[in-house]
Image (cartoon, rainbow, N blue to C red; front, side, top):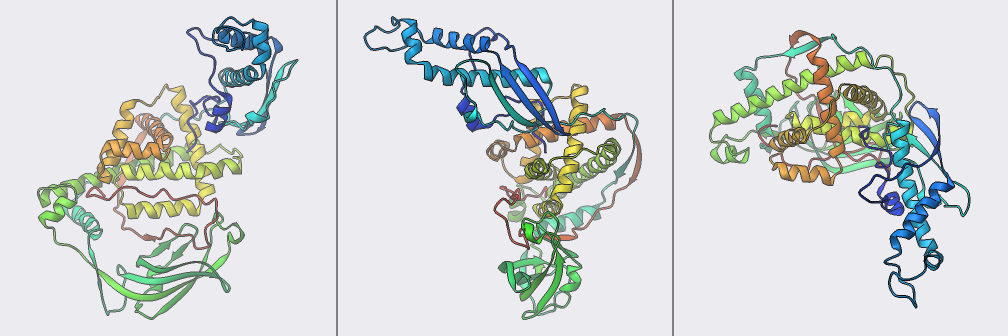
Length: 502
């Protein structure tokens, strides 16, 4: 989702710019404020063009301090350390000090602009530091573009009417979920019988545009389900297409690529999918042995495993309640939001939204199979889903600010512990993976949004409705039918293994 709006504009500078600027002036006392002349032009709902002018008096003040700091350490031939005349030091080190002064002025100016102009930045400033020249005379002037949260009045959020799914899970529910779990540990056994729904087909898979091969896979193992999902398309009635399939059969079907397909030239176009059936297999579930219980999570008995599965179902119910509430709440809160979000912003934020969604699903006990299907669904409609997610984030973040909602260290511990429980990894390893993949901002946004939603729900009026357990309808293949572009959004692949909480 969007970058944390609590980050200042200065803090949002990328690493290269930060290195070029250098560190700001240090000291026990806060630096004297700059007498900046700032002009902010609105160039769109989420974009601002900022022009900053630093007067000559401030520039000379920074030079004076920089030379004063180096008087005792400047090395000048013919003089003992710290004994060289100041004018000689200024002449000898003018260029080096100028770079330092420019860096300090830019860093301090950006921070002051962020504080005083109340710019809720959602991305890094578009500023080429190397192109900024510190003049010999007159003011220092520089410009940059910035993406910001749009300005809006917070909608009425108290007293909303919300439907809430409810269910008491039966032993039969637990058994069905346990069978799904055991399927991940099952064995595929070849069969001579024609394929039926639930079977697996090994196929040579090819996508073509006319005679041109767009993408292919020599050996793809696919479970027969009603929908076959790819990153940029989905094939409906896949179970009907594969009915009675047997080795040697060739099945063909047309499918339409999405408007967000990585291959821009083929967006919205129909292509042909060709399945050459190599073999058909059926799933044989494993016996629930002591070794399997250990492998699934160190369980001592089948009853203990069933309790873990029941907890997993309860977490999925909680996710369904949150998702249903979120949909209803945000439909009401974003009804009047018609902001024109920049295409480049949507493109950059697509991966962040994907990461946030995966984190939420993983902490809610969904299997990697279900998560892959959700990933493909998001990728197929990345612009629309990202635009909606950003609007929702803006509203919830604004509500959080108004109500003083903040993230706490303990919030991260809870989220990471839930992901660790699902993945079978230690919390320490999960945290390291999130930090390595630069996903802590996504986790932070998830925490803030959940807290804001909890506040809304604490003031809402609920009507309980039945929660129906859904079978997995879509089989997901991690492939783009139309081929991958160089700047394709990478899927947020799991780095962990599935356990009994799946």
